[in-house]
Amino acid sequence: MPVFAQYDLLVAIVVGFSGLVLFVIRSRKRRLPYPPGPKRLPIVGNLFKIPSQEAWVTYRKWSEEFASDVIHVDVMGAHIFILNSMKSASDLLDKRSSMYSDRPRLTVMQELFGMDYNIAFAPYGSAWRHSRREFRANFRPADLETYQPLEQRAVHRLLGNLLSSPDNFVQHFRHMAGQVILSITYGIDVLPENDPFVADAEKVLQSIAVGTGKEAALLDSIPWLIKMPSWFPGARFKRYAREWRLIVTGAVMTPYDKVKRELASGAATPSVAANIISRLDENSTEEDLWVAKAVPGTMYLGGADTTVSALQTFVLAMTLYPEVQRKAQTEIDQLVGNSRLPEFSDQDGLPYVDAVLKEVLRWHPVTPLAVPHKVMESDTYEGYYIPAGSTVIANAWGMLHDPAVFAEPGQFYPERWLSPGAPAFPNQAFGFGARQCPGRYLARASIWSTMVGILAAFDIEPTEDGPPEEAYSSGFLSYPMPFRCYIRSRSKEVASLVQATESEG
Image 1 (tube, rainbow, N blue to C red):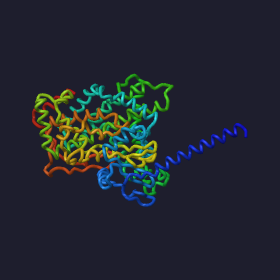
Image 2: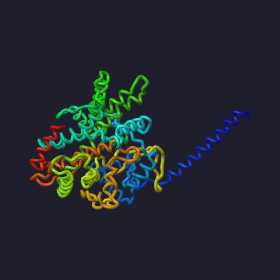
Image 3: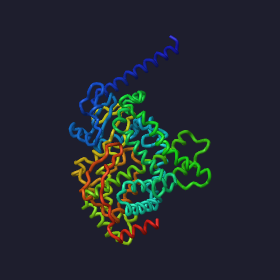
Image 4: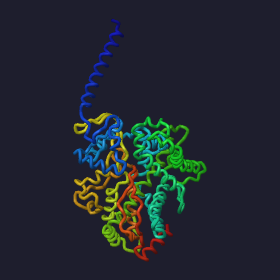
């Protein structure tokens, strides 16, 4: 037998034996069961059991019903694993982040609506790692002090707006958040009202709500539906795609192009976008160009959601829990007095206000189910099998409402954060593992400075109709449903202080 023939035979034997070993190993893994979950129907699986309202509550109940921290759901053959405990999230998303840091493809958001420039949805890989480095370079905790004067001015303008038109508090929150993030990312000084960039960000958040709803989730689970005609059930998003795509891409490209023009003319204001774009040249790769658009775009569009939703939750909580409001105001009055408004330098002396911030993020996290993760290779966990390509959902709301960790979790009770042995911070509100929100430190600072300013200057009270209902939207981003309350100046002296401080800013 020729030497090369003997070699080919040897290779065939080695490959065949390796394949057999791999098959046996995989077969053994497959013999492991999936975690427990609701009973599945043939073909469709659990498609009709996925809740359309407050899914995080249902997932928490499933965990109790099936006595498991991890729940398995099957949607048309697509495997979804729901983590309902801090331990399972830590074990998989944190400790095994190298396997769990990918993202499932969001068909509606990315392919139809054009949300490819959002780092939060980007697949794991070189471009994502590059963008993450750029993001962190601008939002390191040690560097946040440079943004404090900007945040303080934005809060002072907000307080003035609340003084003149308190009923529009949600719109004022959006404007304040936009003022901070647009200045940092693009060097844009927003208009006092009706700013087009703030309006664009709000429209994009609306597109995210549409593109991550239950019908969109069906398309994400069954991508071939995208090829169906727009009249086909479940494919109606194709009719909206053109409109939403223009909104989403325009929101990223309009400020990006503005900074490019200003750099070319020498009139650019220092910003994250200007810093990144100025480093582009003829040798820049497609990845470099993507990062230059994605990093400031994600900061801009993602910077508003956490802040605005959390501040609405804060106002709702103060309306429903007046005793918490009084206690926080007393702490502020004792430290700050009535001759000035609180500043960032006061934070260490206001532990109860800090506890209110933590409780706001725990009580109703902005992204109750976080952003889904995707498993990059097959894994086993506590005797269960998790195949590669599966979607993993971390139920942040469920973890932050675990009665074993937080007694009476439905109650807004800041004192829980001041008790011995209390968790340091509700980090689950900002995601998990390597995909945790890199802008969380700026968000925390913005929320704290706004909260303490409002508490120092205003009383928040129910209307004559009584306390509002504690009701939230059920999308990927969860907001309090519209409600009314009274926001009144605490005194004439405080009102004069707010007016004077606003004019100085």
